[in-house]
Image 1 (cartoon, one colour):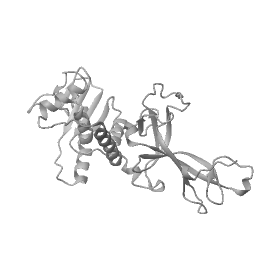
Image 2 (tube, rainbow, N blue to C red; image 1 turned 90 degrees about the vertical axis):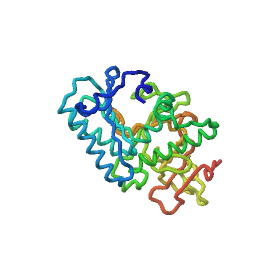
Image 3 (cartoon, helix red, strand yellow; image 1 turned 180 degrees about the vertical axis):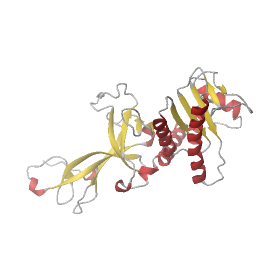
Image 4 (tube, rainbow, N blue to C red; image 1 turned 180 degrees about the horizontal axis):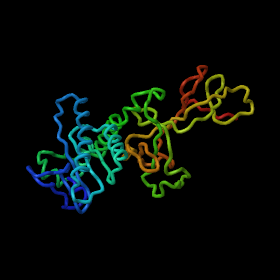
Length: 307
């Protein structure tokens, strides 16, 4: 699998049964990558498997540090048949920081492995000969891709999406990138005059996509609950209210994300198609903040242009 991903033949088993593997199963001296695989019995309780895997990660690192294998590597992959969870990624980062490792630890759960395998015909034919990819229409591919991203996000971002803002234990701030951006961490405007990356707070999910709070603004609401974002001359007839601007990214416009972030922003990063007037957002609406005298929700259907 890794040989096909990296277009090489350098990945091989590190020793064999009876040899001291020093915490490593597979190595590539050419790519400076090592892999430790963890096959898990998925019929057991999830909490037990998760606890065991966290312990496996720590034991693997400790064994590498103790045995000091005489090979150079920059990345250690932990690959398992168990599901993805943000806790594994965070734990890998914590171990790296606490032990001051000079290599990265990347966790691949079964969802990641499946996504990789779909694009690896040689690996599939060699090791999964019964796995058949049927030709699909563009509509089918689009729907499957969209649902796959939705399920992946629901699994990885449960610590945010399953809780209200005030009950979250984790910071809601995320970074959203255009897949066309080449200047990060510098800011650059695209042809539509919009930034190629920016911060936003993950809010919720819906059938339309993933929702982010992108600004706190003020709008003006008349007695019939129509609204405008422009201050009117007869402003005394309007109620000024504070609102959160909520922006929606379609699941199919999310190419991928990095839960761990980088040295600039240690938080999840989304990589998206900015194909909607220079932004990734298919729609925006407003949610009222701390005001029970007006509707909770305002969108384009109730926006009014006043003369």
